[in-house]
Image 1 (cartoon, rainbow, N blue to C red):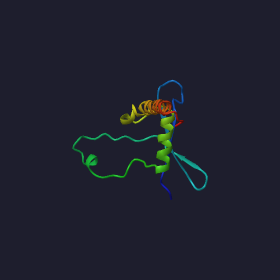
Image 2: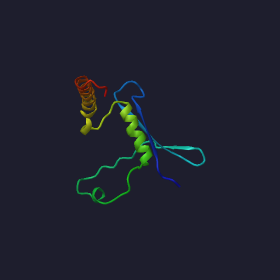
Image 3: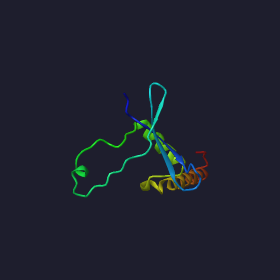
Image 4: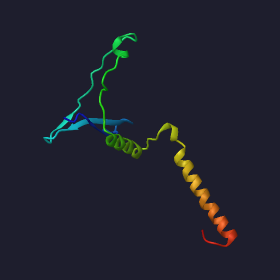
Length: 112
């Protein structure tokens, strides 16, 4: 059986908080849908073996689902921290290049 889950994101579903809500689910071949209904939390001391031994991930999603999640978060205005300035910078560079084309075209009396 395919144990990969799908993950969806909804921006502030209740309209009361500035949050993104996630729903983790799995579609079964029968057409039924299995919903994750919460997570169990365990508390450990820093030296406990459970913190230092390998264990399976709490859940996994397919690369396609991860891409959908990234796309949805992008729609909501979230950007990677490392790329915060890149969108505005690209617009500025494109505008600068358009200006340079106009200047060069006018100087050389050609259409670029």
